[in-house]
Length: 437
Image 1 (cartoon, rainbow, N blue to C red):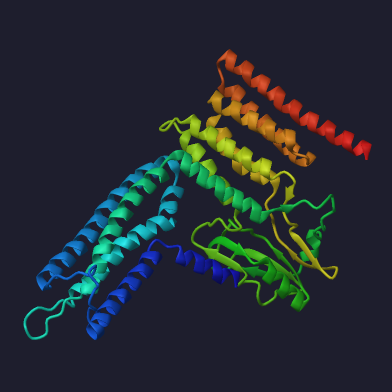
Image 2: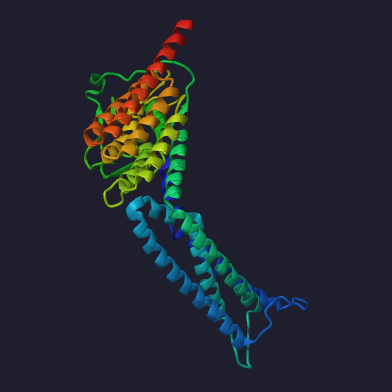
Protein backbone atom coordinates (compact mmCIF):
# COMPACT_ATOMS: atom_id res chain seq x y z
CA UNK A 1 0.00 0.00 0.00
CA UNK A 2 2.81 2.40 0.89
CA UNK A 3 4.63 1.48 -2.29
CA UNK A 4 1.56 2.30 -4.38
CA UNK A 5 1.19 5.62 -2.57
CA UNK A 6 4.87 6.41 -3.21
CA UNK A 7 4.49 5.70 -6.92
CA UNK A 8 1.30 7.81 -7.06
CA UNK A 9 3.04 10.73 -5.34
CA UNK A 10 5.97 10.49 -7.75
CA UNK A 11 3.58 10.34 -10.70
CA UNK A 12 1.51 13.37 -9.61
CA UNK A 13 4.69 15.34 -8.92
CA UNK A 14 5.86 15.15 -12.54
CA UNK A 15 6.27 18.43 -14.40
CA UNK A 16 3.46 17.66 -16.84
CA UNK A 17 0.78 16.57 -14.35
CA UNK A 18 -0.58 19.92 -13.11
CA UNK A 19 -0.44 21.56 -16.58
CA UNK A 20 -2.32 18.56 -17.98
CA UNK A 21 -5.04 18.89 -15.34
CA UNK A 22 -5.33 22.65 -15.93
CA UNK A 23 -5.54 22.12 -19.69
CA UNK A 24 -8.31 19.54 -19.30
CA UNK A 25 -10.26 21.93 -17.06
CA UNK A 26 -9.77 24.74 -19.58
CA UNK A 27 -11.18 22.60 -22.40
CA UNK A 28 -14.14 21.65 -20.22
CA UNK A 29 -14.74 25.33 -19.38
CA UNK A 30 -14.58 26.30 -23.05
CA UNK A 31 -17.12 23.60 -23.97
CA UNK A 32 -19.42 24.66 -21.10
CA UNK A 33 -19.27 28.31 -22.17
CA UNK A 34 -20.25 27.47 -25.72
CA UNK A 35 -23.11 25.22 -24.59
CA UNK A 36 -24.37 27.88 -22.20
CA UNK A 37 -24.46 30.56 -24.87
CA UNK A 38 -26.06 28.31 -27.49
CA UNK A 39 -28.90 27.43 -25.13
CA UNK A 40 -29.54 30.70 -23.28
CA UNK A 41 -27.76 33.41 -25.25
CA UNK A 42 -26.57 36.62 -23.58
CA UNK A 43 -28.97 38.17 -21.04
CA UNK A 44 -29.57 41.90 -21.21
CA UNK A 45 -27.55 44.03 -18.83
CA UNK A 46 -24.28 42.03 -18.93
CA UNK A 47 -22.21 44.96 -20.15
CA UNK A 48 -18.92 43.33 -19.16
CA UNK A 49 -19.34 40.51 -21.70
CA UNK A 50 -17.59 40.90 -25.06
CA UNK A 51 -20.04 42.40 -27.54
CA UNK A 52 -18.00 42.47 -30.78
CA UNK A 53 -18.60 40.56 -33.96
CA UNK A 54 -17.20 37.51 -35.67
CA UNK A 55 -14.05 39.09 -37.16
CA UNK A 56 -13.12 40.77 -33.90
CA UNK A 57 -13.57 37.52 -31.95
CA UNK A 58 -11.38 35.63 -34.42
CA UNK A 59 -8.62 38.23 -34.22
CA UNK A 60 -8.72 38.41 -30.44
CA UNK A 61 -8.73 34.66 -29.88
CA UNK A 62 -5.97 34.13 -32.45
CA UNK A 63 -3.79 36.80 -30.83
CA UNK A 64 -4.24 35.35 -27.34
CA UNK A 65 -3.56 31.79 -28.49
CA UNK A 66 -0.41 32.60 -30.46
CA UNK A 67 0.95 34.91 -27.76
CA UNK A 68 0.37 32.41 -24.94
CA UNK A 69 2.12 29.48 -26.58
CA UNK A 70 4.89 31.65 -28.04
CA UNK A 71 5.76 33.33 -24.74
CA UNK A 72 5.60 30.00 -22.88
CA UNK A 73 7.96 28.28 -25.32
CA UNK A 74 10.48 31.12 -25.36
CA UNK A 75 10.55 31.81 -21.62
CA UNK A 76 10.76 28.18 -20.54
CA UNK A 77 13.46 27.28 -23.08
CA UNK A 78 15.64 30.18 -21.91
CA UNK A 79 14.97 29.27 -18.29
CA UNK A 80 15.98 25.63 -18.79
CA UNK A 81 19.23 26.76 -20.40
CA UNK A 82 19.99 29.07 -17.45
CA UNK A 83 19.11 26.35 -14.95
CA UNK A 84 21.32 23.81 -16.70
CA UNK A 85 24.24 26.22 -16.42
CA UNK A 86 23.52 26.96 -12.75
CA UNK A 87 23.13 23.24 -11.95
CA UNK A 88 26.81 22.79 -12.78
CA UNK A 89 27.70 24.50 -9.50
CA UNK A 90 24.63 23.64 -7.45
CA UNK A 91 24.03 20.02 -8.44
CA UNK A 92 21.11 18.28 -10.16
CA UNK A 93 18.83 19.06 -7.20
CA UNK A 94 18.26 22.50 -8.73
CA UNK A 95 16.70 21.06 -11.91
CA UNK A 96 14.66 18.56 -9.92
CA UNK A 97 13.36 21.32 -7.70
CA UNK A 98 12.41 23.40 -10.75
CA UNK A 99 10.41 20.62 -12.36
CA UNK A 100 8.65 19.64 -9.12
CA UNK A 101 7.89 23.17 -7.97
CA UNK A 102 4.12 23.67 -8.02
CA UNK A 103 4.50 27.36 -8.81
CA UNK A 104 6.46 26.64 -12.00
CA UNK A 105 3.97 23.94 -12.96
CA UNK A 106 1.06 26.34 -12.39
CA UNK A 107 2.69 28.99 -14.60
CA UNK A 108 3.21 26.53 -17.45
CA UNK A 109 -0.33 25.25 -16.92
CA UNK A 110 -1.70 28.80 -17.17
CA UNK A 111 -0.07 29.38 -20.57
CA UNK A 112 -1.03 25.99 -22.01
CA UNK A 113 -4.56 26.14 -20.61
CA UNK A 114 -5.01 29.60 -22.15
CA UNK A 115 -3.81 28.30 -25.51
CA UNK A 116 -6.12 25.28 -25.36
CA UNK A 117 -9.10 27.36 -24.22
CA UNK A 118 -8.75 29.96 -26.99
CA UNK A 119 -8.06 27.35 -29.67
CA UNK A 120 -11.16 25.36 -28.69
CA UNK A 121 -13.23 28.55 -28.63
CA UNK A 122 -11.85 29.70 -31.99
CA UNK A 123 -13.19 26.63 -33.77
CA UNK A 124 -16.75 27.52 -32.71
CA UNK A 125 -16.70 31.00 -34.28
CA UNK A 126 -18.90 30.98 -37.39
CA UNK A 127 -19.57 33.79 -39.81
CA UNK A 128 -22.01 34.21 -42.64
CA UNK A 129 -25.72 34.88 -42.65
CA UNK A 130 -27.04 31.31 -42.26
CA UNK A 131 -25.94 30.41 -38.73
CA UNK A 132 -23.50 32.96 -37.35
CA UNK A 133 -22.14 32.30 -33.87
CA UNK A 134 -19.69 34.19 -31.65
CA UNK A 135 -18.81 32.68 -28.22
CA UNK A 136 -19.07 35.96 -26.30
CA UNK A 137 -18.59 34.30 -22.93
CA UNK A 138 -15.45 32.50 -24.07
CA UNK A 139 -13.95 35.61 -25.67
CA UNK A 140 -14.46 37.43 -22.38
CA UNK A 141 -12.83 34.62 -20.43
CA UNK A 142 -9.95 34.54 -22.94
CA UNK A 143 -9.28 38.21 -22.23
CA UNK A 144 -9.14 37.42 -18.53
CA UNK A 145 -6.80 34.50 -19.18
CA UNK A 146 -4.53 36.80 -21.17
CA UNK A 147 -4.21 39.06 -18.13
CA UNK A 148 -3.58 35.97 -15.98
CA UNK A 149 -0.73 35.00 -18.33
CA UNK A 150 0.87 38.41 -17.86
CA UNK A 151 0.65 38.06 -14.06
CA UNK A 152 2.00 34.51 -14.26
CA UNK A 153 4.95 35.67 -16.36
CA UNK A 154 5.90 38.35 -13.81
CA UNK A 155 5.59 35.85 -10.97
CA UNK A 156 7.62 33.25 -12.84
CA UNK A 157 10.55 35.57 -13.52
CA UNK A 158 10.72 36.63 -9.86
CA UNK A 159 10.28 33.06 -8.62
CA UNK A 160 12.98 31.58 -10.83
CA UNK A 161 15.40 34.37 -9.97
CA UNK A 162 15.03 33.54 -6.29
CA UNK A 163 15.20 29.81 -7.02
CA UNK A 164 18.65 29.85 -8.62
CA UNK A 165 20.18 31.77 -5.72
CA UNK A 166 22.74 29.58 -3.95
CA UNK A 167 21.49 30.45 -0.47
CA UNK A 168 17.93 29.60 -1.49
CA UNK A 169 19.02 26.17 -2.73
CA UNK A 170 20.97 25.49 0.48
CA UNK A 171 18.02 26.55 2.63
CA UNK A 172 15.68 24.38 0.58
CA UNK A 173 17.90 21.36 1.17
CA UNK A 174 18.15 22.27 4.85
CA UNK A 175 14.36 22.22 5.14
CA UNK A 176 14.29 18.82 3.40
CA UNK A 177 16.86 17.54 5.90
CA UNK A 178 14.85 18.83 8.87
CA UNK A 179 11.71 17.08 7.68
CA UNK A 180 13.62 13.88 6.97
CA UNK A 181 15.14 13.89 10.47
CA UNK A 182 11.73 14.48 12.07
CA UNK A 183 10.26 11.55 10.15
CA UNK A 184 13.19 9.22 10.79
CA UNK A 185 13.72 9.90 14.51
CA UNK A 186 11.69 10.09 17.69
CA UNK A 187 12.00 11.74 21.08
CA UNK A 188 14.21 9.79 23.49
CA UNK A 189 11.92 8.40 26.19
CA UNK A 190 14.74 7.40 28.51
CA UNK A 191 17.75 5.16 28.76
CA UNK A 192 15.85 1.98 27.99
CA UNK A 193 17.71 -0.91 26.46
CA UNK A 194 16.84 -1.73 22.88
CA UNK A 195 16.07 -5.27 21.83
CA UNK A 196 19.13 -7.19 20.69
CA UNK A 197 19.35 -8.86 17.31
CA UNK A 198 19.95 -12.63 17.25
CA UNK A 199 23.38 -13.99 16.23
CA UNK A 200 24.23 -14.82 12.62
CA UNK A 201 23.77 -18.53 13.29
CA UNK A 202 20.06 -17.90 13.90
CA UNK A 203 19.55 -17.14 10.21
CA UNK A 204 21.44 -20.17 8.91
CA UNK A 205 19.18 -22.44 6.90
CA UNK A 206 16.49 -19.80 6.37
CA UNK A 207 14.79 -19.16 3.05
CA UNK A 208 16.63 -16.45 1.10
CA UNK A 209 14.83 -13.90 -1.07
CA UNK A 210 16.75 -12.69 -4.12
CA UNK A 211 15.75 -9.55 -5.95
CA UNK A 212 14.30 -10.28 -9.40
CA UNK A 213 14.92 -6.69 -10.48
CA UNK A 214 17.39 -3.86 -9.88
CA UNK A 215 17.09 -0.27 -8.70
CA UNK A 216 17.26 1.92 -5.64
CA UNK A 217 15.28 0.82 -2.62
CA UNK A 218 12.83 3.71 -2.28
CA UNK A 219 10.57 2.37 0.45
CA UNK A 220 10.70 -0.30 3.12
CA UNK A 221 7.18 -1.00 4.42
CA UNK A 222 8.07 -2.24 7.90
CA UNK A 223 4.45 -2.37 9.06
CA UNK A 224 3.50 -4.72 6.23
CA UNK A 225 6.57 -6.88 6.85
CA UNK A 226 5.87 -7.19 10.58
CA UNK A 227 2.22 -8.00 9.94
CA UNK A 228 3.12 -10.67 7.36
CA UNK A 229 5.79 -12.20 9.60
CA UNK A 230 3.42 -12.28 12.58
CA UNK A 231 0.62 -13.80 10.51
CA UNK A 232 2.83 -16.66 9.30
CA UNK A 233 4.85 -17.04 12.50
CA UNK A 234 8.29 -16.37 10.99
CA UNK A 235 11.29 -14.16 11.66
CA UNK A 236 12.39 -11.91 8.81
CA UNK A 237 15.70 -10.12 8.21
CA UNK A 238 16.21 -7.41 5.58
CA UNK A 239 19.72 -6.86 4.23
CA UNK A 240 19.18 -3.53 2.45
CA UNK A 241 17.88 -0.17 3.57
CA UNK A 242 16.27 2.73 1.69
CA UNK A 243 18.84 4.38 -0.56
CA UNK A 244 20.81 1.21 -1.29
CA UNK A 245 21.11 0.10 -4.90
CA UNK A 246 19.76 -3.42 -5.22
CA UNK A 247 21.39 -5.58 -7.88
CA UNK A 248 19.45 -8.34 -9.64
CA UNK A 249 19.69 -11.86 -8.21
CA UNK A 250 21.31 -10.63 -4.99
CA UNK A 251 19.98 -11.53 -1.51
CA UNK A 252 17.72 -8.85 -0.02
CA UNK A 253 16.02 -10.80 2.80
CA UNK A 254 15.98 -14.08 4.66
CA UNK A 255 13.12 -15.69 6.57
CA UNK A 256 13.24 -18.32 9.30
CA UNK A 257 11.87 -20.89 8.73
CA UNK A 258 10.42 -19.48 5.48
CA UNK A 259 9.59 -16.21 3.77
CA UNK A 260 6.14 -14.60 4.08
CA UNK A 261 4.19 -13.99 0.90
CA UNK A 262 4.21 -10.21 1.30
CA UNK A 263 7.98 -9.83 1.63
CA UNK A 264 8.79 -8.73 -1.93
CA UNK A 265 5.92 -6.21 -2.49
CA UNK A 266 6.98 -4.39 0.71
CA UNK A 267 10.33 -3.53 -0.94
CA UNK A 268 9.67 -0.76 -3.46
CA UNK A 269 12.43 -0.34 -6.06
CA UNK A 270 12.83 2.59 -8.42
CA UNK A 271 15.29 4.14 -10.91
CA UNK A 272 16.22 7.07 -8.62
CA UNK A 273 16.76 7.83 -4.96
CA UNK A 274 13.97 9.74 -3.23
CA UNK A 275 13.92 11.58 0.08
CA UNK A 276 11.21 9.63 1.96
CA UNK A 277 12.94 7.11 4.21
CA UNK A 278 16.38 7.72 2.64
CA UNK A 279 17.84 10.18 5.14
CA UNK A 280 21.35 10.09 3.72
CA UNK A 281 20.05 11.08 0.27
CA UNK A 282 19.14 14.56 1.53
CA UNK A 283 22.44 14.80 3.41
CA UNK A 284 24.44 13.86 0.33
CA UNK A 285 22.67 16.50 -1.75
CA UNK A 286 23.85 19.20 0.65
CA UNK A 287 27.34 17.69 0.81
CA UNK A 288 27.43 17.65 -3.00
CA UNK A 289 26.68 21.38 -3.10
CA UNK A 290 29.63 21.98 -0.75
CA UNK A 291 31.93 19.68 -2.76
CA UNK A 292 31.06 21.46 -6.01
CA UNK A 293 31.66 24.82 -4.35
CA UNK A 294 35.12 23.67 -3.23
CA UNK A 295 36.15 22.43 -6.67
CA UNK A 296 38.99 24.39 -8.35
CA UNK A 297 36.65 25.53 -11.11
CA UNK A 298 34.24 27.15 -8.66
CA UNK A 299 36.38 27.98 -5.60
CA UNK A 300 33.51 29.18 -3.39
CA UNK A 301 34.34 28.39 0.26
CA UNK A 302 31.53 30.66 1.51
CA UNK A 303 28.92 28.25 0.14
CA UNK A 304 30.73 25.32 1.76
CA UNK A 305 30.65 27.18 5.09
CA UNK A 306 26.91 27.76 4.63
CA UNK A 307 26.43 24.01 4.16
CA UNK A 308 28.51 23.25 7.27
CA UNK A 309 26.31 25.62 9.28
CA UNK A 310 23.17 23.82 8.04
CA UNK A 311 24.65 20.49 9.08
CA UNK A 312 25.37 21.90 12.53
CA UNK A 313 21.77 23.09 12.72
CA UNK A 314 20.52 19.58 11.88
CA UNK A 315 22.82 17.88 14.42
CA UNK A 316 21.74 20.25 17.19
CA UNK A 317 18.09 19.50 16.40
CA UNK A 318 18.94 15.81 16.60
CA UNK A 319 20.00 16.10 20.24
CA UNK A 320 17.56 14.23 22.45
CA UNK A 321 16.19 12.27 19.50
CA UNK A 322 17.01 8.74 18.42
CA UNK A 323 16.23 6.33 15.60
CA UNK A 324 13.61 3.63 16.10
CA UNK A 325 15.17 0.21 16.72
CA UNK A 326 15.84 -2.00 13.76
CA UNK A 327 14.74 -5.08 15.75
CA UNK A 328 11.04 -5.74 16.31
CA UNK A 329 9.42 -8.34 18.57
CA UNK A 330 5.74 -9.22 18.85
CA UNK A 331 4.59 -11.18 21.91
CA UNK A 332 8.26 -11.88 22.75
CA UNK A 333 8.79 -13.42 19.31
CA UNK A 334 11.31 -11.96 16.86
CA UNK A 335 9.55 -10.75 13.72
CA UNK A 336 11.74 -8.28 11.84
CA UNK A 337 15.35 -7.11 11.71
CA UNK A 338 16.44 -4.42 9.25
CA UNK A 339 19.42 -2.01 8.97
CA UNK A 340 18.93 1.54 10.20
CA UNK A 341 20.84 4.78 9.84
CA UNK A 342 23.40 5.38 12.58
CA UNK A 343 24.77 8.62 13.97
CA UNK A 344 28.25 7.66 12.76
CA UNK A 345 26.96 7.02 9.24
CA UNK A 346 25.11 10.33 9.27
CA UNK A 347 28.28 12.21 10.26
CA UNK A 348 30.27 10.40 7.57
CA UNK A 349 27.74 11.43 4.92
CA UNK A 350 27.83 15.01 6.13
CA UNK A 351 31.52 15.69 6.57
CA UNK A 352 33.66 13.23 4.60
CA UNK A 353 33.28 15.02 1.26
CA UNK A 354 33.67 18.47 2.78
CA UNK A 355 36.77 17.42 4.73
CA UNK A 356 38.37 15.78 1.71
CA UNK A 357 37.69 18.63 -0.72
CA UNK A 358 38.19 21.47 1.77
CA UNK A 359 41.29 20.33 3.65
CA UNK A 360 43.41 22.95 1.85
CA UNK A 361 40.99 25.78 2.72
CA UNK A 362 41.69 27.10 6.25
CA UNK A 363 38.39 28.99 6.35
CA UNK A 364 36.45 25.77 5.73
CA UNK A 365 38.40 23.59 8.18
CA UNK A 366 38.25 26.22 10.94
CA UNK A 367 34.49 26.57 10.55
CA UNK A 368 34.08 22.80 10.49
CA UNK A 369 35.96 22.51 13.79
CA UNK A 370 33.81 25.28 15.30
CA UNK A 371 30.59 23.56 14.30
CA UNK A 372 31.75 20.19 15.66
CA UNK A 373 32.69 21.91 18.94
CA UNK A 374 29.30 23.60 19.26
CA UNK A 375 27.45 20.34 18.58
CA UNK A 376 29.61 18.40 21.06
CA UNK A 377 28.98 20.95 23.82
CA UNK A 378 25.24 20.31 23.71
CA UNK A 379 25.19 16.61 22.81
CA UNK A 380 24.20 14.49 25.87
CA UNK A 381 25.08 11.09 24.35
CA UNK A 382 28.71 10.07 25.06
CA UNK A 383 28.82 7.70 22.07
CA UNK A 384 27.80 10.51 19.75
CA UNK A 385 30.45 12.78 21.28
CA UNK A 386 33.06 10.14 20.50
CA UNK A 387 31.94 10.14 16.88
CA UNK A 388 32.17 13.93 16.81
CA UNK A 389 35.72 13.74 18.22
CA UNK A 390 36.57 11.23 15.50
CA UNK A 391 35.63 13.76 12.84
CA UNK A 392 37.54 16.47 14.69
CA UNK A 393 40.66 14.28 14.52
CA UNK A 394 40.11 13.46 10.85
CA UNK A 395 39.65 17.12 9.97
CA UNK A 396 42.79 18.22 11.78
CA UNK A 397 44.86 15.40 10.34
CA UNK A 398 44.03 16.38 6.75
CA UNK A 399 44.30 20.12 7.44
CA UNK A 400 47.77 19.81 9.02
CA UNK A 401 49.12 18.26 5.83
CA UNK A 402 47.49 20.83 3.54
CA UNK A 403 47.99 24.05 5.56
CA UNK A 404 51.35 25.74 5.01
CA UNK A 405 50.91 29.15 6.65
CA UNK A 406 52.15 29.17 10.26
CA UNK A 407 49.43 31.55 11.38
CA UNK A 408 46.72 29.34 9.94
CA UNK A 409 48.34 26.32 11.57
CA UNK A 410 48.35 28.04 14.95
CA UNK A 411 44.69 28.94 14.61
CA UNK A 412 43.92 25.38 13.53
CA UNK A 413 45.60 23.92 16.62
CA UNK A 414 43.75 26.37 18.86
CA UNK A 415 40.38 25.40 17.40
CA UNK A 416 41.33 21.74 17.69
CA UNK A 417 42.09 22.08 21.41
CA UNK A 418 38.86 24.03 21.95
CA UNK A 419 36.83 21.28 20.25
CA UNK A 420 38.44 18.55 22.37
CA UNK A 421 38.00 20.52 25.58
CA UNK A 422 34.32 21.09 24.82
CA UNK A 423 33.80 17.36 24.40
CA UNK A 424 35.73 16.58 27.60
CA UNK A 425 33.70 19.12 29.57
CA UNK A 426 30.51 17.48 28.31
CA UNK A 427 31.86 14.10 29.48
CA UNK A 428 32.63 15.55 32.93
CA UNK A 429 29.15 17.04 33.23
CA UNK A 430 27.69 13.69 32.31
CA UNK A 431 29.79 11.94 34.97
CA UNK A 432 28.84 14.52 37.61
CA UNK A 433 25.18 14.05 36.81
CA UNK A 434 25.44 10.28 37.24
CA UNK A 435 27.24 10.67 40.58
CA UNK A 436 24.62 13.07 41.90
CA UNK A 437 21.81 10.67 41.00
